[in-house]
Image 1 (cartoon, rainbow, N blue to C red):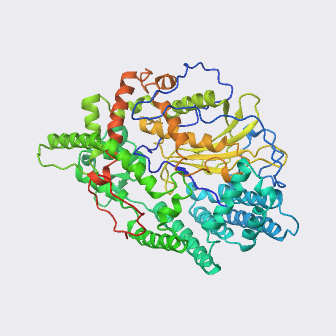
Image 2 (spheres, helix red, strand yellow):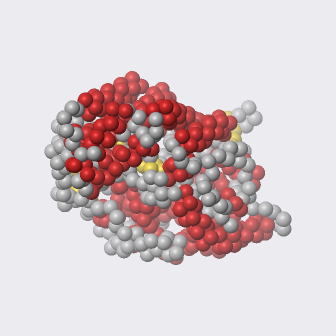
Image 3 (cartoon, one colour):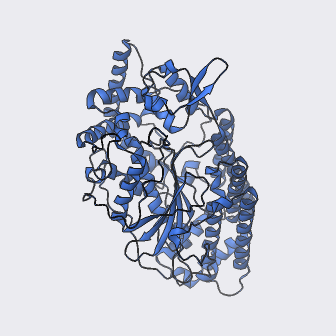
Length: 639
């Protein structure tokens, strides 16, 4: 009775900038454009694994004999799904999203009360399947009514949707503590049918039993009541923490002469603000403005100021929240008999124990540290040469700037020049072409999106072999005030097998922040942003093309230390010349991206990734003070 939030690249290197194009280059199912033969990406030591085609269109419909009566979450009269959006977000109002959430909760209560009242033999159909129905209902309510808290331009609607998210998460948390449902699951687990379960049905039961244990059902009711209250408080703190981040707004206001080093194509897109003294250029914390400024602005003091504004955003309000959350997590772990919160959380992941995760990270760090330190020493030497100061120290707000200088001098790579080969609309055409051919689907543009903002694009996904509907995905690619500030893929409608043996059409949304086109210039992406787009679209495919019979395991509802794997494999296509050849064209000359430039860009990016890995140890930056609690057992610092 839980669902997952966005699958995000917010923490992935610097790449999540923003760029948006008009809808002029729509990819359709009937594209006749010839394209080069695709060759599987070859990976270097930097990219450890080959890029296997790990997502495929499963055409066979699985009929599940255990499914309870399904309550269709979509309009069954829909006849042309390629022209019909999965949701009508244009109807969203504060009243409607609140009512939608409450209707879902009422329906969930009805389902669970029915399960609890069963007097006859317990079966998978009357006990386990309805619990997945509840998971589905909550996920649908979150997708249609809570999701707009991330993207709506209306402050009142965002606040109502955020309340809905908190309400749904709190309700979902409380369900895990219902004594009658716990008794029903345990009663079913004791039956011969349950003990004979195999495959994914057995897995579903095992996960439900594990949920009960992790909510304290091996302890007395007093402990469970305490854990329930603490978990509900964590939901409240998480919502407040996110609200503070989302609503935080800060910027540098600079004179023209303070923008030394930045290209005109960057400067001409900046907002000009009239102050009491003169007109100033506003440099916000949005990725399309933030990262290029750190990479190109010559004034170190301004790079430092902007970096710290972003690094410490909402710290005054969020440090107390985080401090309380850390204490609550530690208390939950103690009540449930875990040595630390780390141990509690990672138990459900592939790593299983904190020490296994630490051992992996320590081993990784050992492999890269020597080269990383050498790379950073080279950047520091570049700073000393540049400033003619033999004692200059490389700071964390410096490394992107000097990394770009080294790239230009040693590899003849300038990211602003590389971006001239990647127009957003052409990149989308190329991305669609690659994935349509790999996975065996068509992406069809839906004209009437009924979306939450005019910038949003909507596509239907069809099986290329028979045209049957698979699902939809939205693309919201450009920054705007109060929008989610990173890049992420959101599940809006999860997959699951329906009562008739069909499959619930899926829906997802890719939210990013790429530079918006202007009247003078199209939307241009740096190569790292192209990689981000391919990465996030890997999550979209994972979500939309799922064929799990149960919502619990659908799409990206997997172990969190695996969830990035498909996207990280699929993003390798942006380094494969045979894929890029089909859509890279210089914005002015029309020439394709030179392969030598791509190879040089790859070598320079490898250096940047090595330098970023040990950054917390090798750089100094002011950090908020937080309590040191719940350190995992056997913790040791890597050296």
